[in-house]
Each structure stands twice: as C-alpha cells, then as structure tokens.
Length: 375
Length: 121
Image (tube, rainbow over all chains, first blue to last red; front, side, top):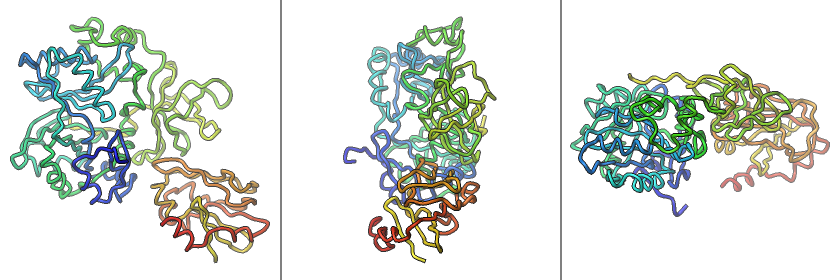
C-alpha cells in the first residue's frame, strides 16, 4: 500500500468516511457511508460528485500555433475526425494499435489554440509516451500534473454548478469552456461517465478541495465512490478500458463505430491514416466476426466478468465471455456486456455458466438505462 | 436462545431441535448492498463446509458454507424476493436456512458472542 499514489482529495475522502481501495495505482474511494447502491440511485435522482483526478489530463500544443496541425497530428493515432471538431467542443476517441486493437479510450477537446485530452488512469503513462513518440515533431505533449479532476453528475448537477460558476447552464452536451470560480480558471466539459447530464471539471490542485467542499454544500450533491461509478457506467452501456475494450478488441468489435466519423472511413476526406486502419476499415465494410453486446439475464443472478457464454442450455463450445457484469440499481436487475458472434442479434437468448449452471440471458440494447444528456 | 458464530461470519441459533443459520451484521456490512440470494433446496443433506447458498452484493459473490453436517429443513424464501433484507436485519428476519442436526453438541466448538467480537476487532 505504501507505493499507492493519492489525489489532492485524499484527506477529504477520509473525512467523508470513504472506504479506500487501490485502483490504477491510486488509493481511491470505492464507497462512502451511503453505500454503493444508494450512491448510484442518488446520482440518478440528485447529483453525485466523483474524484477522477487519477485520470490523465494532457495538453497537445501545436508547434505551428495552429490547432488544426495538432488535430491532424492526433488523427494519426485515432480513427476519429479531430480536424472537424469545432473550438469549444469535445468528442470520444480511442488510440488504436497496428493490429487494429484499442490501446486506450479518451476524450479530446478543441480549446481554440490547443487540444486537451483526458485518458484513463491505468494507461496515462503509456498514452503520454505514445503521443510523445509519435507527435512530438508537430505537437508539444504536456501532461497536466498540477490540476485535479472532478465529475459532477445527475439531474441536480446543473443547478449546483451554476450556483458557483454562472454560465455552465448554457453549455450543452460535449461543450467545453474555461470559466472562473473565485478567480480560478476551471476547465469544464458537459460530459461524464454515468449516462446522466453533468460536468467534468479540471481545477488547480491548490483550489481543488475548497471547490469540492463548495460543490458538496450545494443542495443534493453527495460524494460518490468508484463502486457506483462502475454500476452507473455499465447501466449507461459505456466501456471500461481493460475489461470491455483492450489491445485485442477493435473499435468495430467493440460496437464503437459511432465514434468513427465519415471523414476517416473509406471514401472519406481523410480515410485511414491511423494505426490498424486496414483491419478497422475492412471491418467497417464487412463487419467483424464478434461484437460487444448488452445482456439482460432472465433471472436475478448477476453474471460477472469472466462468465462464459454458450449457445444452448447444455453441451457445445463457449461462444463468448462476459467482460463486465453486475446488478443495475436503477434497472433493478442484473446486466452485463459480452463479446458474442455477430450473427446473434438483439432478442436472441444465450446461456451463461454461473456456478456450474447454465442460466439464460437475452441480448439487449444498450444503454440499459436511458441517458439524459442536455443536447 | 444461544447464538454461536463461525469464522466465516455466519451465526447459528438453536431453535428447538433445529439450527437457524444467517450471516452476521459485520459480514453484511462488509459485503455491502445484497442484490441476490440463492438458497439450497429443502431436504438437501449437507456436510460441514459444503457450499449451500450464494449471496451476491453489488460488489461480489460469496458462498455460504454449511456450518455443520445435517439436513436443510427450511429456507427463507423472503430473501430471494427481497435480498436487501440481509442488510436491514441480518440477525433477525434475514435468516438463510434451518438445519436438522444429529448432535447439537457440535455447536459447542463455535465461538460465542464475545469470542466473535474479538475476531472482528
């Protein structure tokens, strides 16, 4: 435990009664006294405040001074239209590898004269090294180490943040803005990892705890741990890197084709030109043999990560594996994601082996819980 | 009624000629919100240490082991319909099953309340 890193909120977590666990090399709150289930429901009914400071914040500053050059440089690493991303907007992307797999997923924002990316905690060193190695001729890759990151999610997030930072109300889903709080610049995006409306807010370390306390003092805002963060994102059908997507899964297999805009597809203005383009463009045209799908178990028993799936109630070879699974507090039942052969479509029944017994589950659309973004 | 405790954080209560089995408050708290309970079938013969029930919280799945040799004579169906009862009333309404055992004296080897409190600190 001695080697675990901490975020600037470590003392605050303890003060709030958090149960701390190691996560991606950090000592992080898995839950507060409210407990995972109530924290989950509170985020959907009110607002939840999450410490996500373990994630990697990185600035990509174009050496030419033109943000278009940073966008074009980053496009060499992601199958995403970054050049077409207007100033003040953010979009989802993924770093691909030469085999067409996913090295990490990330958010990229156009901040006018530079790009700002947020990457997963477990991958940030790898991602920064990757960007430095591949982009440094055109872009200065600057890890942001003096800022914390908070997510404020749920129907009461807007009122809570607007009370402290006038102007956030006018933002829509995936907008980014720099707005002041007590003279401090906050880097704000209207986005999150719960399926709810909400914001992600980068705040200087020096001001972070005071800002978090000010948010917690707003009506309906409660601290939420990683446990509920996981069940919230799973209900929202979102991937967790290292589980639902990894080096071996392609964006097409992962059902993330919506994140690959026309400009980067075959026939597009800047088709290909990212690692693994051969496989990924081929799969966009011809389909992939397996796909990430949602599963709703028919009974109440949760089906966890690693559970093996079969086509029938007995015999046969495994056809796939669950990559995330658990209980959805808002949908009041179990839910899972799995990779299954693409010929199996929504409504098909498959069988998951749980404690030696095959239990039925139906391929279901995701998100499991409707999202409520402010478009 | 005498309560006994196992190192697996189960409680055992002698009720006439049967032993009622549940999990302790400490166990329920450690597990977190319970969302699924699977119980053995009535009339199942179990040996000490057998997996005989499953309890799943939002975090993970755990097995409930048979604390002694015997026969399952009753199960608490309410837990299947309302797993949250395990968190609400672990020592009372949320009993898991009742067992018929040949020799109640085997319970003597289990911890009493003071010894269990020492175990969980």
